[in-house]
Length: 260
Image (cartoon, rainbow, N blue to C red; front, side, top):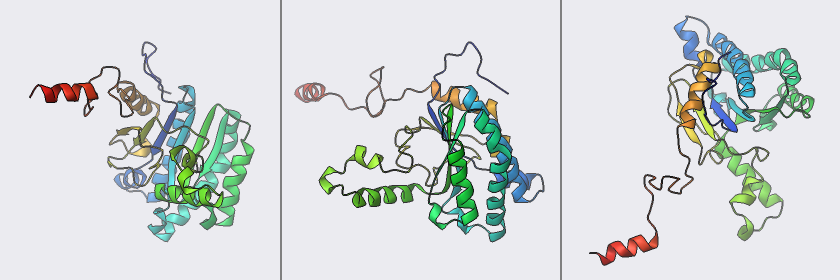
């Protein structure tokens, strides 16, 4: 398993979120059925979970199945559901022993009963673990998440003038986790694809051409190293005071006007 060099002082993100893209293309390059690409992707996920845990990452969130993925061919969707069940049965027990807590984020009201039961049972089985919180975004969409949070807030009786960002955040499906520090997307595409839209407002984004089944601990280290080289300003000018697009203080603005 690859790891960061011991001499590195790289900051480790507390929460990493990943759009796992490229399984189908990985399979096609090898003249394999797409489902075998997804199976290889599960093996990569298990390695990345362990790599993240060993590096001190506390939260790992992966985009397993989006609310738009139902548009894929029925055979592929069915295969993905079956693969999910097999993966939970094969890997969950060992990951639980390693301190991984499993959670699911998404709309489970429209998935089959056997898939819903398997996901909820996996959550319950690892509820006491805290080394790494693994969230699988399943039948998830960022817009859905914001809408359901608004609906829950209204149902809870939150008054319109009391609904601010902090309040709404408590109703998001991942209210138990800090916002992602780093969002990774594999496969060469450069977009979020409706993933954690609210939570990733100030996340650092990392895009790689590496197809997901080829993503491993070394690739994770590269993403972390890129993250460590950045200055996170959250709208401020940052420690250097030279943040791009930063607006000067009022005194600076007035002084500039008086000079003209």
